[in-house]
Image 1 (cartoon, rainbow, N blue to C red):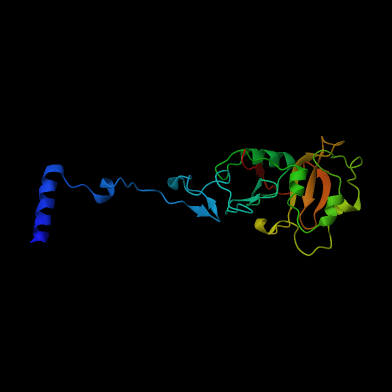
Image 2 (tube, one colour):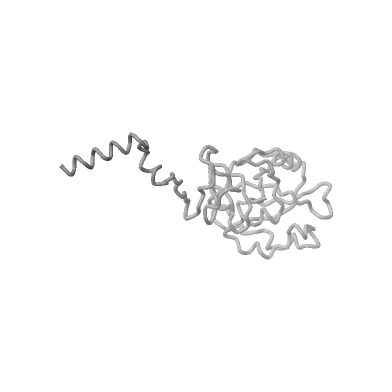
Length: 212
């Protein structure tokens, strides 16, 4: 009898006040769950925008997709796809026009930037050719250290960039002969040398500063 009385009281209450959903009546609202990638919260990235770009999420030691790889040591993003071979001027134009990873601020890397991804050749650290010192004679471009590691087996390119063994243009011109020559790195050995800008036998791998 007591149970029947309680049911009748509940029905009478609903007829006067209406019965609301329990969750709403209790003031409970739906909360979005935190989303993490390798321990990093990316819940702020809109779900309908596709994969976050390298500027939107840091996924640990290096951000790695089918299109780009970000070197955590320098913060530089690198194009994964290898370009066709081309002249130095065409390489600059190619990178300036590149749209990748939702960004269009790519550039032909400088010699220091290109050097930063050489792996497995400590000898190259003794080569004086950098962005700040780009003269063959004045900066020691003739030294043995600039020859890299010719006896190394395999590429000096990071594995994330497919251990590529091509030779790549840098944006850095040779200091004295800049009207004609620019620096390259041969990723078969890490050798740094300057060549004629008009040669169209070297490839391009564009870069950009992630976070800019």
